[in-house]
Length: 277
Ligand SMILES: N[C@H](CCC[C@H](N)C(=O)O)C(=O)O
Image (tube, rainbow, N blue to C red; front, side):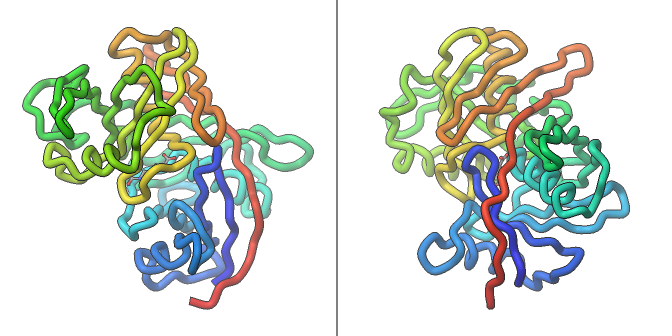
């Protein structure tokens, strides 16, 4: 199977061009290729597929083989792949995902995609649609006891489920301990991606993330969007925020008039190869 290794702010996936390749069992393949010792090493597997609803279609699988619905860093890398590898010459493309059709503006530098601005659509705040099992209109700053401490959760879906909590310092968090306790908490019937956020000022935050199905990643695009929505809902920031992640920075802007979140960030191709599965 031919593949291309790419990352968005260090959130790295194995990408397969399914216009040319066929992946029979993507869930098993995701587990195999993601292994950082016995495989290629990645946070998961992303398939670039034909679509009858958009220019392209994304199928995304976490490291554990579970299928994710949306991947912000992933859609930026797909945009880079399809332009740089001449599957399109358009600088605005549409991408079908399980989280809806996304529209991407490609920023070109020296003939290749440098950064991408993604219309991530509307944030979803209705608990039953996130889903989170709390019977309120919205889950904002909701106290929940986890691991003997009370955490204040703000829950947002960007096509995939997120729980955002605010902390004074992200560096000292023992994510490998607390992350899975959020991920698999019974409040989240489909598990959850959890963002731990330190607000620096009204335009800047830093964030670490424990992802459903992949553990701690160096960045999470949908998570950065959920984070900024949580900041706005808790009146901690303005509507345009620079999110510092372990692997890089993402610029998130919430257009309140149209209830739409925009994400701008880089996409990087590392290498291509072939693997016998
Ligand atoms: N890293 C991705 C999110 C993956 C979400 C996945 N872990 C799930 O929802 O199952 C991003 O950049 O948005």
